[in-house]
Length: 92
Image 1 (cartoon, rainbow, N blue to C red):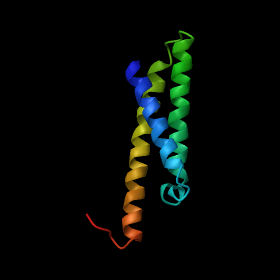
Image 2: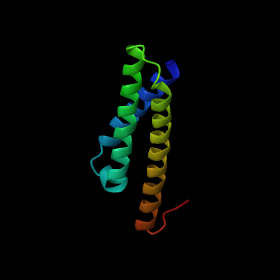
Image 3: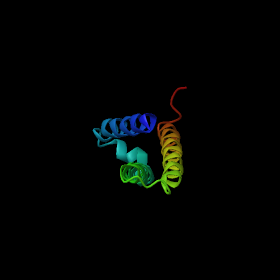
Image 4: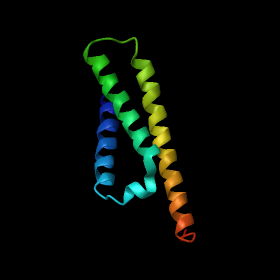
């Protein structure tokens, strides 16, 4: 569980840093924000289930969290590709 808490806190800190730059929304797009919110919601539901000692949905929330993290990473990769295309290819 401590790993899940650490990942959750890391995601939140990363998002806070990203959101400090308003222009980032032009590149990330609404899908990233949707996926980030979905992941955060799944984490909150997981922690609530654990707090209430309800174990039957924990597996579902863990799957939702992993899916959300994967989608967020994919969204970031897409945003990077879009920035490179708009910037004339950039340097690699």
